[in-house]
Amino acid sequence: MARFPFCKITTGPIRTARIQLFLYCFLLSLIIYFLHGRKVTISLDSSHSIYGAMERERGKTLTDMTGVRAAGPQTPVKTSWGAPIVWGDNRNSVWRRAKFAEQGIRIGLFVLVVGTYAQFVRRFIYSAETHFLPGQMVTYYILTDNPRTLDPPVELGPERQMKVFPVTELPEWDRLAYRRMVLLADAIRDQIGSEVEYIFCADVDQEFVGLVGEEILGDLVATLHPELYGMARNAFPYEVEEISSACVEEDEGDYYYTSELYGGLVSEMYSLARACSFLILQDQANKVTARGLEESYLNRYLIDHRPSCVLSPEYSWWNSHLTAPVPAQRLVSKGRQCAAYDLQKREQHKC
Image (cartoon, rainbow, N blue to C red):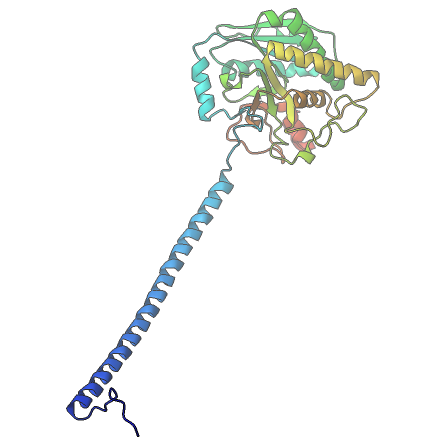
């Protein structure tokens, strides 16, 4: 057999040393292998344990946050067209009260007091004296079929006054609802427009129970209906009969507003009252009755002329299974509260 010069077989002590060196390296490799495997296992187990703990803690935090959100949902503060949604205790409301506190603003509060609604007028005025724009110049415009209802006169605070206008008796609610817009338009044109800068229209069967301050002032102000706040658009009781002037199409409408309280600059309110009066007269000529009476025409107008300021349900509230919870109650409807009671509670509360 031929021999390759570089492939010599080693013998003797050198060969033995090399074999020992090989065995040492082999054993060292095994030791490193097992130690590394155990370390990896320990590391994986440890990291899994820590990760699990972190996940459990994270899950607990998320659960806690979900609970917070459920207990106190965020309240929207702006409409899609940029108008503020007013909550009485938020920072902007507090700032507006402070801003207008030293300014002399003339505000009117317009109420219609006819028939059995006379029973509510004193409570309404007394509560307004305490809570409605305290410190500002306020004139109560009372349109009534029985001026003696206010005898003896209600004692008012400084820079507050009352003006009573007699109107023809309107014994039925539907007639009252149809007439109020006409009466409001006429009163603004003939007198109110030259006496105040803002005018608010309110139902007399209500009571102010919390501060209603300068945060409500705006060019055109509407109040969210408390039973429909947060509801889907298809739940709103808009007028759907096409023959009615108050008809709202399916692709129209952002919110549903209550007729319990609305207002604004006298010029804006005059335009609103005149337009709604015209729509009402059109329907009366066609012998049509809108499902929500005055409220239907108000909502029709506010779809075409979006309000510059939207009051939250704090400013029109009553207790029923449909009303949304609010941080505070500021104006409560006694009339609609009675309507929400069953027969027994109505008798108990003398509704």
